[in-house]
Structures are given as C-alpha cells and as structure tokens.
Length: 305
Image 1 (cartoon, rainbow, N blue to C red):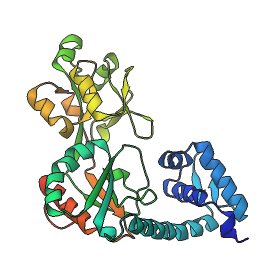
Image 2 (image 1 turned 180 degrees about the horizontal axis):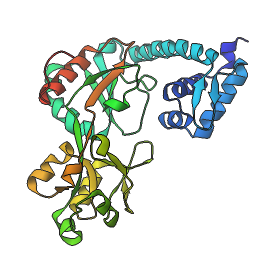
Image 3 (image 1 turned 45 degrees about the vertical axis):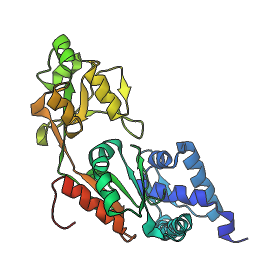
C-alpha cells in the first residue's frame, strides 16, 4: 500500500487550511469543524506520513521544513482538482460558463445588488452564483472564483482589486433613543448607554473601533443584545433598542430620512476599501473582469485595475 492510499484527502485539506490561516481555530471555522477535530486530523496525518508537519505552541502555529514543502505542492494539487471538478459541474460550458463569488453581507447590499442588472445584460450566458456569508473562508479550497472582503482581510497570496473608496464606521441612534437617553459627547459616555453588540463571522465579539491615527481606540461597549446581521442591527437601532456601530454607507438612506442620526461624528473610524480578490494562480475569469468593472464604475472608480 502506497503512502497516498493511507492518507485521507480531508486531512490534507485541513493541513492546507491551517497553513493558510496559521491557526487551528480559524481553519476549523472555515471547514465547519471543531478545533479538536482539526487537531485530530493533523495528528492522524502526521502519524501516517511519519513526519512532523507543524510546530505548535500556545500562541502560534508554524510549519516545519517538511510541512512547508508539502503545503506548496498540495496548493497546486487542490487548484487542479478544483478546476477539474468545475469542468465536470458545467459540461459543455467550461469554466467560463459559471462564476462563483463569496461576499459578506454589507458588500452584497452595497456592491453586488446594484451591479446585478448590468451584469446580467452584459453577460447573459454566465451562470453567476453569489454566496453571502460573513465567516472567514478559503475561497480556493471551497471552490469559489473570487471573494469580496475589506483589504486588510485579503490573504497575502491573493490578487486584490479595490472596488470602492475607504469606508467610515460610525455610531448611530434613533431620534427616540437619543431623546430618552441623551446623546454621548465623548467615547467614555458610551459606558452609560445601551449598545448593540456586533458578532463577527467567526463568532467572536467585536470591539467598536473609533477615532483615527494615534487617537484610534478599540472600545468595549456595554449591551445585552448581540446581533451578527447588519439588517437586523439597523432595524434594532431604528426601533430605539440601542446605539449601533455601522458602516456609514450602509445606512445612507436611514440618515437621509432621519430615522437614524450619527453621534460622536468626530470619532468616526476609517477602514479599508472593499476588495475583490482571487487566486494569483488562476487566470481571471472574463465575467469576473466585467463584474469588477461594473462595480468600480458605479462606485466612481475609473482607470485600469
């Protein structure tokens, strides 16, 4: 029996994902596993190979020389497998007949939804699949052509194209809430308010980042209600449940109609633009180039990308 016959493909995928994320926990979240299952898969893989692939400590994960060499080879192998499966999934259409993109909810609302009518007009034969989720994923391992995330969340080995200008994060509340509880005048005042907690895609609680430059602070705000969905957070804020931490562009309509008001405007925080990203080893899908151009044009961006 060869070494390959003794190895489970799922264990190799766990190893490659750990290498990309440098974290058992992050890899487990991406693959829908528990951290203990990911750890068990790695122990099984190392035992069957008879080689140590990862150095582990309480704070970090790093590859051994053997692990690094194996990961580089496996990356190319999984890319080939993904392309082969895509061809089978769309017989006759080839890779250019389908485009699969993973985006987080705010990007879907702000960028994808407005672009869909024009994309359908320009690419009528392309089967476009948009999967909306906020958890961190490995787009190559999970079979996507591209993803949309903030610039600082794009893996280093990916090609990234900006789709927007910088974004602003603000604190907002409804007129009823502010009339009842008063308007905070400085960051320390948030400790006396009801704040809607933000749950990230990896199920971790997010501190509100406010201010810019050397004045930027991560604030742990009080609040008994935690929401992981922007639309639900906006609805809760409009109902007067509490103050919310939101993208300013995401609530442009609410600000214009007056159902929400910005507070602590001087402490608004700037974040990276939205980026479309894809594997540097995969030729860019022609329809992806079209979608990027449509989004950039609608966002007022011009020029080559």
